[in-house]
Each structure stands twice: as structure tokens, then as C-alpha cells.
Length: 389
Ligand SMILES: Nc1ncnc2c1ncn2[C@@H]1O[C@H](COP(=O)(O)OP(=O)(O)OP(=O)(O)O)[C@@H](O)[C@H]1O
Ligand SMILES: [Mg+2]
Image 1 (cartoon, helix red, strand yellow):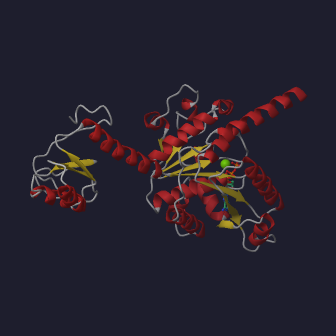
Image 2 (image 1 turned 45 degrees about the vertical axis):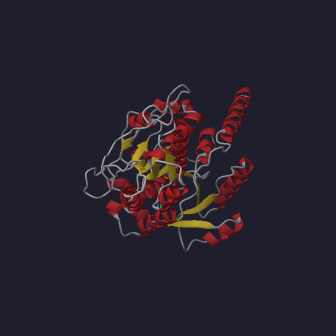
Image 3 (image 1 turned 180 degrees about the vertical axis):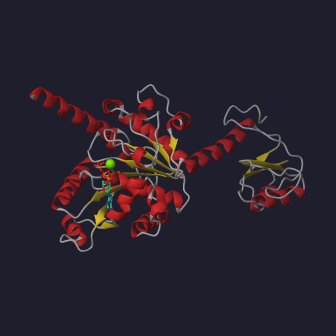
């Protein structure tokens, strides 16, 4: 009967004896099944022990008790022993389908919510440290917290993230552009390049002109699949606004905006806040990072924070010596200066991210709408400029 069910697709295995997960009995499972059905006898007897044992196992499968008759007493005993669902023999296809679908649908919901965090990093100030921040936060999450981490280079014109992480990849985001491309974990694995540090990288297209070919829908689909594959996906959004960048924001659980202690930097941050508010993205609130922070500088972090009416989430100390060494030696901060204040700061930020994981994307959000709007406005503005010229 189970084999004959059209939905959900089941893989049925049979075990005559009590197979307790983790124990060394007849059927020690390599993998605990999603559902275990235990047949209870007329007087319940041995079957109840099995239910109890399964319900105490870790991880615990969903437990169905199969009862020989519709007796309230038997149902009660089965539920008390840990059964999540009771079905009656002989099994009825309709009831079994309903119970199985309930399991598969609730698992889908959990899987959706256990996906990783997508974090966008952005600034409208050029050269403020967006790429360094993206890379170092990824390294801290990887080295110190041993998370599965990937980075995506959406600074398509500059495309320096891969270089900074010492990867040279032939396959880039270009390979997935085009609306007809299927994007799943297999396609993605083909373009992911593992850096020596263990971080997976999706590089920007090799040639500047190819960057125009990467569309918002590619970005959306790539991030959706990557969320399922990694604990953290960090996106270098560079320093200009585009449909692709907003598509990444729409898919993000966090957005870090980098600024420095300068009038120009604060002004850019104002412009960013203004455009961000206008986009009306409901899911995220930007966190502001003070990059290359100098404690004794004339303009203090508090002044910047006050001017923006926004708190500063973290300050990355300026350390020219460490960053110079990293640039010249090709070794990252944890290889060349693991005890530096900069390394510690990134580790602290990584820990904060893990302690307070953000709520992940819920179904039914307005994903994609804003980014497409932005790219339509950007391309119209470009057209207008061409005409003007
Ligand atoms: N905390 C810091 N202390 C000292 N130097 C830093 C710090 N952070 C970044 N830098 C240096 O600043 C320069 C610019 O950094 P980075 O390339 O990360 O900025 P960016 O915002 O990505 O720039 P771009 O606009 O070119 O994409 C690099 O040479 C980097 O080594
Ligand atoms: Mg950069």
C-alpha cells in the first residue's frame, strides 16, 4: 500500500525487529528514517516499548502507530508512548497520504527556515573597505566558528573579491546568466571555487562588459540556492546601486553599510539611507559599520552616528601595517596577524551574527519587485543620458 502512494514519494524499508537509533541492534540505522511506523498488537504489548525507545532517540523520527482497531484506549496508549499519529489497519490510502503529506510539508517549512543567512555588504563611498570587510568577516566565520561560508562578488565591474581570496576561477557568475538557465545546487557547484581558506567563492565575470549580462533574476535564484547550501553567504555589493544589488538586498537577512570618519562618507551614508527608505524593503534594516576607525581622529564615531541618527554596529580599527602585510604577502589576517585588534573585531562580529541569527525569508515576500523597478529606472536614466549626449 505504501509503495503504491502517489504522494509524497516514499522510500520504504522494512525492519522486523526493534531498530533503536544509536543502539547496536538488528537494524542500526546509518540514517534515522523520517517516519517510523510501529505496528501494535491487540494488547499493545511490545509495540509500545518500541514507540518509547524511538521517541527518546536523537534525532527522533516522526512516529506512526498502526493499530489493529479503532479503540480509544489503544489510541491513548500509543499517544502516551510517543506516537505522533495513529492509523488503523488495514491501512487506508487516503488517511496514510494525509498523514505523510503532513510530515513532508512540515519538514519543508523547517528546511526553509533553517537555510543560511545572506548578508549584503555595501557602501556608496568608494575604497572604504567593503571588499576587505566581506572577506574578513567570511574568514572569521570560517576559521573561528567553522561555518560553511560562501562569498559572492556582485561588484561586477571591479571584481576583486576572488583575487583577494586567492582564487582564480574560469567559471564565474556569467555561466549562470540568461533567463533560461536552470540554477540548482549542481549548476552552482560548477562555478563555486574553494579558496585555500575553505571559503567558497562566486567570482564576478572576467570581462567588464560581461557584467551587464548578469540579471536580477540570476542574482535572486543564485542566492536562493546558496542559502540552502551554506550557513552564511556574504555578498560584496560594491559601491554603486543597481538592480542586481537591490535584488541581493531583497534576498538578504542583513545589510552592512560601511562608512568612515569623513564628511563625504557621512553624506554618502545619508544618500544611502534616503534611497533605502524609498525602496521600502520590509525585511531588513541596515547596520552601520565604521571602517578604518581611528579613535583620535577629529571627527568621532559618535558625531557620525549622531549626524545620521543611527547607531554604529561595529568599528573596524584602522591598521595600515596589518593590511599592508596582508596585501603584500598574500596571507590573510589570521595567518599573518591572528592576535591583532582587527582580527579580534571580526571575530566578535562573527559571534554576534551567530548568537542572534536573523529571521530568514518567509514565503510570499515581495522579492524581486523592487530590484526590477530599480533596474528599469537605472536603464531608463542611462538611455536618457545617451540621448543627451
Ligand atoms: N581597517 C583597515 N585598516 C587599514 N587599511 C584598510 C582597512 N580596511 C581596508 N583597508 C585598505 O583599504 C583599501 C581599500 O579596501 P577595499 O578594497 O576593501 O575597499 P572597497 O570599498 O572594496 O574598495 P572598492 O571601492 O575599490 O571596491 C585596501 O588597500 C585595504 O587594504
Ligand atoms: Mg571592493
